[in-house]
Amino acid sequence: MTAKRIVVAGGAGYIGSHVCVELLQAGRKALVIDNFANSSPVALDRVREIAGGNVELLRADLADPADAERIVSAVTAFRPDGAIHLAGLKAVGESVAEPVRYYAVNLPATFTLIRALEAAGARLLVFSSSATVYGDLNKSPVDETGALGPTNPYGRTKLFIEEMLRDLARADKRWKICNLRYFNPVGAHASGKIGEDPNGLPNNLFPFIAQVAVGRLPKLKVFGADYPTRDGSGVRDYIHVVDLAAGHVAAIDYLAKEASPGAVEFNLGTGRGVSVFEAIAAFKRASNRDIPFEVTARRDGDIAEIYARPDKAEKLLGWRATRTIENMCADHWRWQSANPNGYRDE
Ligand SMILES: NC(=O)c1ccc[n+]([C@@H]2O[C@H](COP(=O)([O-])OP(=O)(O)OC[C@H]3O[C@@H](n4cnc5c(N)ncnc54)[C@H](O)[C@@H]3O)[C@@H](O)[C@H]2O)c1
Image (cartoon, rainbow, N blue to C red; front, side):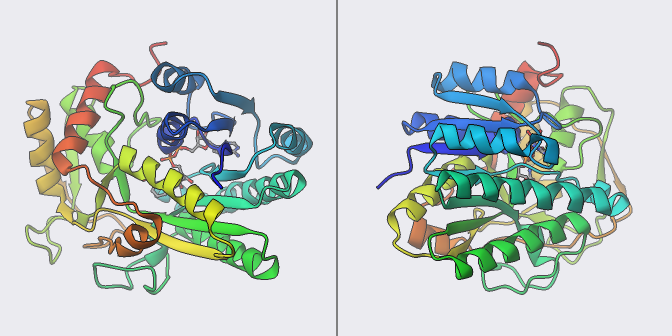
């Protein structure tokens, strides 16, 4: 059995738009639910340009009780096989400043989606978790049995949702769930038509570098060069967003074919750590632009090094990341240089 009709909550966002492309190119149909809190409808027009028309849109707020009935009806009418749940707020710093808002959006959005899937009788769910659930408790490479201890409210929303989904799968064996722990998604679709388009000052390294390279920001801040790593800067496991998106198709297909997997966790990463200075050098080569930077103090809550052991996903999902840091930089740059203001020009 394959899952043919998929609800994609948060499907207009950075990762969700790439997930939609992979689903459509694999011959599936998608119903996107998004309130465009952090995205643009233009992203879905671009998805259609790349991969054809099999994507419907329901503009609704998954965390707003006033929208719940409309969501349940639309999901039921779509007759889905399952859902991929990417909707939520995701900025670590903002979650420290406004923790209640993070809990009040990320948890209820998940409740509503579960309710809608129950109503539709579709109990396959792939959830966007994050490597942030591991906090700084583990030595890298970290596998899925690593200790869990997120260091900020955003990460705790991910851990709480994972725990709730594990409880759900234990209580009702009809539910089949994957908690995908993403490492650091970067890059863009090779067409240059979709990519990451952060509002305001980017929180993550790659959009920051890209906006410096394109001249939108004067210089990059490197938060700490005194970590106990090979060059003093922080080390992360960057994964190409198209590889990550392909992991979602593999995950939903795995759930469709397994009889009773329960709730299963997967690391989606490359297994390789790249330092901030190495990422800057790679982006410089890809863009042929200068990337001025200054080293500033460490950022609260940042850790020295984390990268994945991705073996479980390879073994059970038959998936592994294939794109290199050079591919990530080249594709990120193609998107950024073709769309210096993201989707705002349309
Ligand atoms: N980008 C990363 O570095 C990263 C890493 C680990 C996990 N994740 C998780 O992956 C998911 C997708 O991340 P992204 O980078 O694509 O973020 P994004 O902000 O681009 O996408 C999230 C989408 O959800 C939508 N959304 C938010 N709240 C909503 C609501 N209440 N109702 C309906 N739609 C809503 C937004 O408008 C957006 O389109 C998120 O859950 C995020 O926490 C992201």
